[in-house]
Image (cartoon, rainbow, N blue to C red; front, top):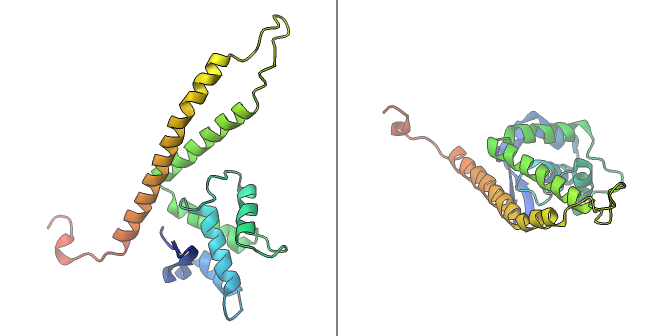
Length: 184
């Protein structure tokens, strides 16, 4: 689903987005003439759900929501928990899901767990009985040496997901000629 694009550092959405009920309900809820609130809320949906978003590396949804809210300079009383917004995020996430995006999300979760593990290692921790260190420094440094490969791998997966989205956007905007039909 390629309803959103970044143009001149601003989230834009295609007119087709307003044909989908979750996005139309956001648009219709803003009764102002300039539709600025609806535009910001649509941008919020993009930043929360699209794999191309600069905030997707923040895996905790509440934390991501806070960062996006700050980035968009939403007023302090605004909540991304309104049912129309939650539905739009869920809708966009589900319709954008591919095997590649699922694998990317899984890879991000694994990297987060590795990061948390490394953050919580206490090198001074000792076995109570033998008084020897619990953690093997060789295994830890070996794991740390592999991190650049993991980072390179996730960057490659992210690039592939973006390419996949761009290809789908191009093929989705193309009209089929009479002789393009399979079997002719």
